[in-house]
Image (tube, rainbow, N blue to C red):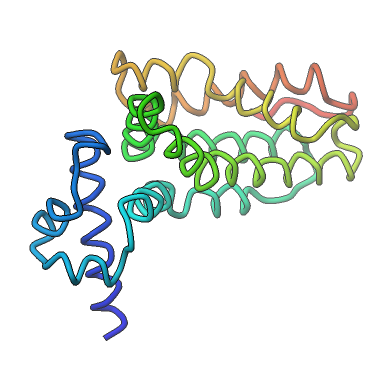
Length: 206
């Protein structure tokens, strides 16, 4: 029964996401989402009280497992290796097609539906940044990075990793970068980051 309930819930989330991306948040009704999921509106309301709650679930589903991968980036003796694992986990998340589509949706709706930006930020980017920050702070505490403001330093690291990749994907100029492209981007980002924040005891990963 629980599995069936979760399957039904996920069917509503997928239906909502499909319609949000195709038509925009404001143009989609709860009736349309129920119809897309081949269910009654009453059943939909039993799972989600509003479009906003469906949007939040859509964002969460798009990033499912990604933050956990960042949190599991691992420990080690070498800062470069830790940062490369962290950067690869981050890029794998933010270049997912569902995540890209959620970003495009929010950017398109921000002027008309500013509350969506807050929902998106709290459910996605904020949680991602906190996960990166925990790893950065642990490296600082271990003496593998010089001490600096954790949030700002985390922003620098993620910005270096995505530089030149995520924007082009968002704009539709490029498809999702493959594993080799992501690795090279993170390797270069790590080298630059450690020049700024390393303690002088690191070496570049191979």
